[in-house]
Length: 329
Image (cartoon, rainbow, N blue to C red):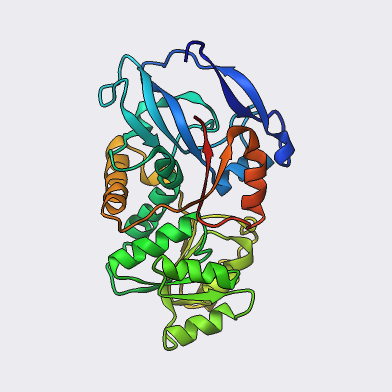
């Protein structure tokens, strides 16, 4: 990188994929607590679309993307755990991962083990750490439980299917087609429910012998809120962790009482990995499962940086399976 000008995606207004602009940006020397990363790949996630549309407000103009992997090229004065030449990854950075190079707070960056590729890391950091906190922190699965996980053939879902199997948990996954059902089962889902053809609540009752499940993991949002509540056993937990169909609004708390004294939480990754120590521990658990081949990283879509808009359109249109990455080298 002779010049410190690099290509990056920026938006100056909220809107559709057409607001994504590929521009030259300058990468300044890292601040004392930062590292400069020459990126090889960046991950694509639904949350990127929320920021593009303004569902999640952020001062304009700004970049997009939270997840990436590459090599450290410069280190801030106060950084001790990383050095130039280290292979690294991150899944929860300030906005701006859609870029060839960038500065990232060192506390949010972890070393990448040798056996994991940059593209794999960019595909699993945010999604894999999401499954880590959902399964090991929000509701700590012990093994033996039967759970419901929506959108089981998506990027987060396929990691969840594999992680559940590794824990000895029976994951029932909702999907939108027979192809996605087969994919979820191939990745370790115990059973699948095709919500375009089957009644989710009735099938959960059948599959659990009328007991329902102790926890539902719901990243879909508006479209599945009531369905999810109807699948939870008395005093069980509803984990609403995303809004792929739009946010859940106008919630009447009384409904939690009517449907069985239920609990509900709306967690996010940042709070669960808000210290370097927590991030290291969660990342290690994820990387260990990948290195042991308990979790295989499935990247079904790869796009160059300039086609980030098309990549987001495919994701929003539910045209993707597994993970999508932007290739930056």
